[in-house]
Image 1 (cartoon, rainbow, N blue to C red):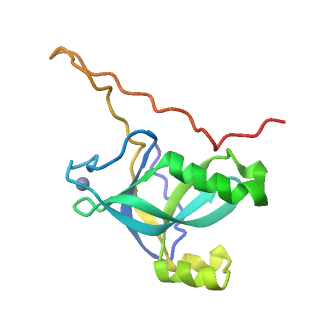
Image 2 (cartoon, rainbow, N blue to C red):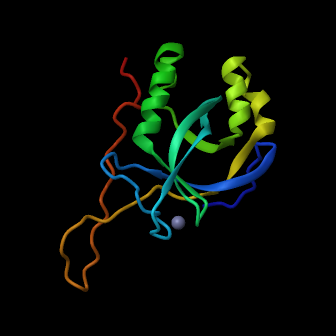
Amino acid sequence: MTKAKRERLGGLPPRYGFMLNPYPDIHVSRCPLCERKTGQRKLPLLIHVDPLHLIALNYTCRYCSHCDLLVADKHAIEHLLTGLYIQSDPSVIGNNYLIVGTVEKKTWREGLKQPKEISEMLPQASDLATYYRELRVTRPGWYKSDQEPPVMEPPPSQEWIKLKG
Ligand SMILES: [Zn+2]
């Protein structure tokens, strides 16, 4: 991975660590970093969707206050994204996307009353401070002490896939 400086989008200081949970059947009730119990935090996530879409999506993440870590379910995010684009621009569905930050709740709420360009929200947005790689868990079961349990491959996207034709 390169450590190239990425241009900052948000006008506020970066905050939150972030991790995607790609397993639809796994509920992240404990923090993947410190194993403490997670709470939840509902906040607008700033998402960049290729090629040039930037949207704010209100979403309830799992949250560890000790690690300041947000965990979002990949399949739930993709379900919401699909719902957003299926009417307006289905050609976007299945494109690469990246959760890049969070938007101040107040700014996001104002945007609901009076639609704002996302560019108007950016001064009130924060980039993510740390982006962790997707969650991986090992397959449950009994293993010999010298045996590493195998990593469970997450299932592919179910809705967020390129439409054929
Ligand atoms: Zn933690």
